[in-house]
Image 1: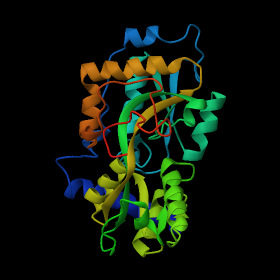
Image 2 (image 1 turned 45 degrees about the vertical axis):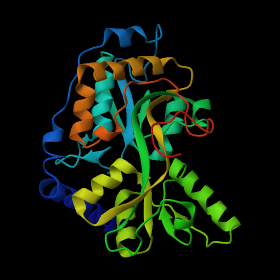
Image 3 (image 1 turned 135 degrees about the horizontal axis):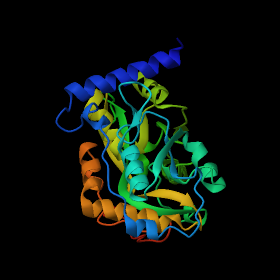
Image 4 (image 1 turned 30 degrees about the vertical axis):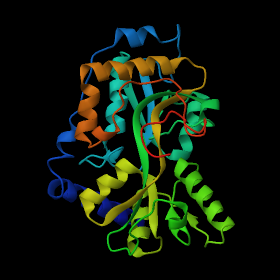
Length: 314
């Protein structure tokens, strides 16, 4: 067994133990393996473009994170079945459209090309709507999201909320993500003011990120708020010390101009009306990220000063 495999197994064990001990009333990994189902939504089906060609006939192929990033995506007790809020949402989308779910775990780097080529119908990767991404993809919103900074529990760092707070720090970020863009922008501002440079650190998986943080090789992790809070509650080895500069719409992502986004948006709105949407968010501790209704291609990050984003400081 490799060091990487051992580290991943240790992380999964910590999550399982934490689920049983740290916060059983809020998130129950065992109970959450039971699927939440919804009825076929005729209004959503009617919005599918005539003759629409799915990646796999009769199925909705949804690409999700292969990493263990709870509550978005994590392995169940059998170490094979993927569960999480994004997986639950994928099932609701497929069933609303009267299709079988074809779930494909992949890395973050794989979804853009897979969506653009038609290999996948939909990507659910905690993808934020941005002006640049809207030139290449279409979106149907399903949550809001804040980015948060996490540090190890005994770190001397108490707060990270502004550019000066990251000066001189080594910060884990995902390549090609909004958090990377924010960190690099903050670092540029800091350098212009003569402050120490921040160093973005890129790792290949969640276990490696956790080990780097706990060993002190990096100072902080910058990623989705829901994941940061979940890990802090379940493992007790990290704590959240601040948020990024703004919230964003998180959306189901599909190929630009293929007409699928409108059907996805109606599917989400149907589950909002029937209650399954709220059941999913509640059992994964994401109710504070609820949306009132799904929108297609709303103003996103980079669209302007106001951006019409969820309520959160700019």
